[in-house]
Structure formats: structure tokens, C-alpha cells
Amino acid sequence: MNVIGHTLCGIMLLANVFVGAGYLFCAYSQYLSPVAFPVFSCAGLFFPVFLLLDFLFLLFWLVVRLKYALIPLVFLLAGWNSLQVYTPFHGRKEPQGEGILKFLTYNVMGMPSEDTDTVNPIVEYIRRTDADVVCLQEYPSYKKEIESQLSFYPYRKVFSTPGWNSMACLSKFPILSVEKIAYESAGNGSFLLRLKMDEDTLVVVCNHLESNKMDTHDKEVYEGILKSPGEENVKSGGKYLLRKLADAAAIRAPQADSVAMAISRNRCPYMLVCGDFNDSPLSYARRVISEGLHDAYVEAGWGPGISYNRNFLFFRIDHMFVGSGFRVLDAEVDNSIDASDHYPLWCTVEKL
Image (tube, rainbow, N blue to C red; front, side, top):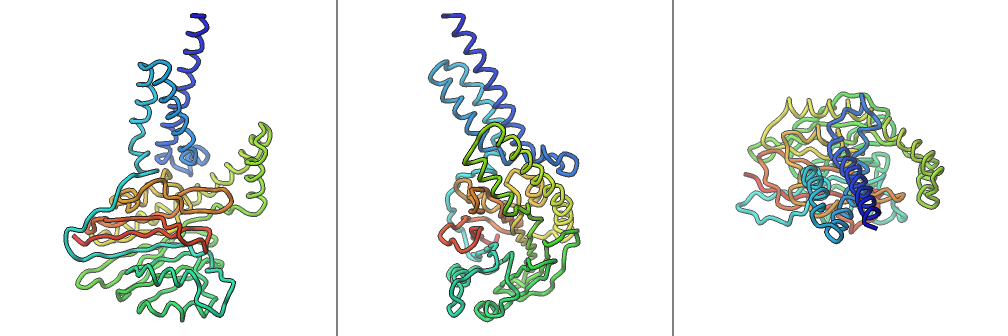
């Protein structure tokens, strides 16, 4: 019995090390280039799975063999920075002065509405939010009634991108200039704006990075895996979907590099960089673009902050960063509105 016990304990230890290694690989996969390692760079998507398994091992050893609980705990702490990025737990900070601003980013999925004779529900949400600057992705520039409904913002700019995925910036501050950030894309884009914020200039970078292009067939494959998680189904379907995600990540990487270069050239204390990155918190694109900036959700958000809400895919793929001239007070992925396949992300900041 003692031999059997030691054998089982050894097997569990090996399994724990394997899970811990997977956890750390997922945590640091954001440092892999998706161009050079397209599949491995997507490992961050599996971070919550290995996090849960490592936590279960921690509970297991606490009950079975206390001294071995140090193993999953060491793995957990080794990936702590990534854990804080993936699911922060921070409360709202109290302002220390004046100059409070609110920023909003929202992929509006064309602003669908069943009743064209009334104000669009997304427009009403934007009105209630009363943000100082709003960045919208998948903005329906072809719906002329939306433009008039958004007239409560004195300054508005619509950006045309290849295909139908237009973008827009709504502002309470005058828009001084707009420039497109050059990179290759079949239907997405990024734009840099300069706004006159009292006596200062606010640089805004609005992004909609390359989509994963999940079509109806892909979603059926994914749902099929969830409904029938047999070995063959998971293996064939999972390999197909991972390859598609990897291909999209490889396209996003140079796009993210171009955005990061534009940010570096125009860096100033007052910056807002946001949008639909189509990538998780532990991704190359999010890491590269956020360098030198403060991630609003990481600094003041609570929980994983799921921003994409369709097809059983639950990830935070919308992000918001601000410059050193702002102190983040609060941030939230707001699931109070379900009019799009994304939830809006907003933050409040204080000028320093």
C-alpha cells in the first residue's frame, strides 16, 4: 500500500509539473513573435485552463501532502504578472484633484436595431455614458440616421477602412488632425488623432486590428467540440481552429508593430490608445502596443473583463491604455448592454 501511495504521489507530482510548465508557457507566450511562432504565440488563450488546473493542484496538496503545496504555489507566483494582466482585482480610486475625464471604446457591430424609427440603443448608451472621447469600431457609416442621432457630440470623425468596417471618434474636444497608421489589412485599420484638450494636446489612437475571421463554419466546428468533446472531434476541430487563429495572429503582429512605432513617434503625457485588438490580454499585439502606457483595465478593473460575448467565446479582446499624464481611477467592461457582440470598455482618469 505504501508503494502504491508513493507511486500515485509521484504521478501527481509529474502531472503538477507538467501543468505548471504549461501555465508558465501560456503566461509568457506574449513574448513570442506570432510571425515566427504563430501557433505557440496563441498559447495565452489557454491561460485560464492551466491556471485552474494549477489552483486545483494547490488545493489537492493542501489536503493530501502539505509540503508539496509549495510546487503549484511557486508556479502561480512565477506567472503572477501575467495573472494580474489577465484578471486584475482592483477597486475604484478616489480622485485627488480636478480634471476628471471619461473614455469609451466600443465595437458596435454595425449598430443593429430592430426599430429604425427610434434612437438606436447604442446611441442611447453612448449618450448616457457621457464620455469625453468615444472610439467606435465597425461603425455603420452607411446609416445616415446614426450620424444625426450622434449630433450631441460637437466633434465627430469617421474613418474609412477597406470593406465595410468603418471607425469613428466622437469628442467633446476639437479634432486638430487625423492620420491613418500605415499597415496592410483586408478590412481593418488604426488611426491617430490629435485633440485640443484645453491648453494641452490629447493624442488618440483608435484601433481595429485584424479579425480572426471566424465564419459560420468555424463557429459550427467550435460548438461541435463543446457539444461532443470526443478525442477525434477535439483533435481535428481544435487543430483546424488553432491554425486559423495562428494565421490571424501572424497578420496582427506587424500591425501591432506599426501602431507601437506610431505611438513612440508621437509619445506625450496625454495619450489614449484603445480599440478592438481581436487578441487576448496575454498576446503579442497587446503587449507591444501597451509598452510605456498604463493599461486602464489592469490598473482599475475587476475580474477577467470578458468583452467579446458571442458563440461561447469569452475573452477580453478590447483594450484601453493611457499616457503618463493620466491617473486611472476606474475601468469597466460594461455588460449592461447586449446590442453588439462586444461589450463596451470605459475608464475614468484624472489629469496629473
